[in-house]
Length: 458
Image (tube, rainbow, N blue to C red; front, side, top):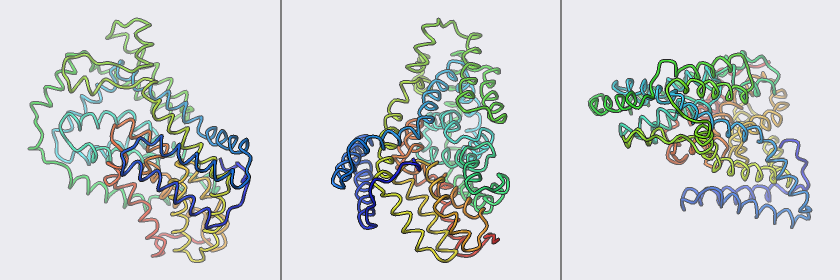
C-alpha cells in the first residue's frame, strides 16, 4: 500500500477532517449503534470515492487503488482460510479437546487470568504469531472461561495481551523481523532494546490479572471434573493429540513459511484422527469447510467443540477486504501522506519525536487497520528525523512495535481486531479495557521518551 501513488494533494485541514469523519462513522456505528463493521466501512469507502471524484480523480484510478490495497493483505486472507481449516482439523484430531482437558486442570488453581496471560505469552514466543496463538490456545482458554463462568472479556484481554507479548518478543515473529529490517539493525539488538519497556508492561499486566482473578473457592471442581470426564468419554483426549502443536512450533522455529506450517500441522491432526474416528472422506471435506460439529449430548462441551472450517472465516475475510480497500483509497487521495508530512515537521525534541512517532503508528492502525503498514510507514516517515536528533535507530524500532504491533488488536475494524473478535466471540470493545499489556506498551514508550530513560544516542 505504501507504493500507491497519491493522485491528489489535499490540505492538512482537508486530510484531517476526512480522517476524523471516517473514524467517527466507524466508531459510532460499531460502539454506539452495535452495527456490524461491514456497513460503516462500506459507507466510508463510498464517501471517500465521492471525495476523490470531487477532487477530479478518475474513478478507474480510485478502483485500482482499492484493488492495490486489498492485494497488500492477500497473504493474510489465505492464512485466514488455513486457520479455519487448522481449527476444525485440531478438533477432529483431538488437539484442541486435549488442550481443553489440560486447561481444565489449571483452572482449579487461583490466578486464572494470570495463568492464561503467561501461557499464551509462552506459546506466542514459541510460535511467533499472535493470531495463530489466539486461534489455537486462545480458543481453548476462552472456551474454558465460558464453561466455568469466568469473565469472557477479561479472559480475552489476557489472551490478547499474552499473544501479542509473544509476537512482539519472538525472533520468529514477522512484525519483529519487519521492524528490525526497516531500520536496518540486528534483530536481537532490537528485541533486547524492546525489553526495557516490554518487561515492565508484562509484569504490571501479570499483577493486574492475578489481582482480578477469582479465588479457588469460586470454581466448582465437581463441574470441572464432569467436563473432563465428558471429553474422555467422547474419545477426544489422547496423548498423541499434542503432536500437531509440536509440528506447528518446530516448523515455525525452522522458519517454514506460515502457509506451509499451517498445512503441515493440519495434515498431522487429520492423520492422527484416523486412530480414534471412523470418518469418511466426505465427512472430512464437510468438517474442513463447515467446521466440526460436536454431538456428545453435553451442551457445554458441544458448544466448545462446534467451530472451525473455512466458512467460519468468511465474515472476517469480507471485513479485511473492505478495510484494506479503504486504506488504498486513503493513500490514493494523498490523505495519509499529507498527515505524515505535517507531523514530521513538528517534532524537534526527543520526547516530542517519540510521542509523535507513537501517535503516528496508532493513527495508521486506526485509519488503515493494518499493523504491517503501521510499522512500515512509521519507520519510513521518521527514520531520517531520528538521525537528525542523534538518536540510535533502535529507539525508532522500539516505538514502532510498542505503538504499532500491539495497538492493532485494539482497533475494532483492524485486521487483528476483526480476526480476534471472530475467533474468541468477544467484541474488541468488550476486551479492550482488559488488554492491559497492549494498553501499557505505548504509554510506557512515550513516558520513557519524555523522561529520557533507556534512550540510546549515536
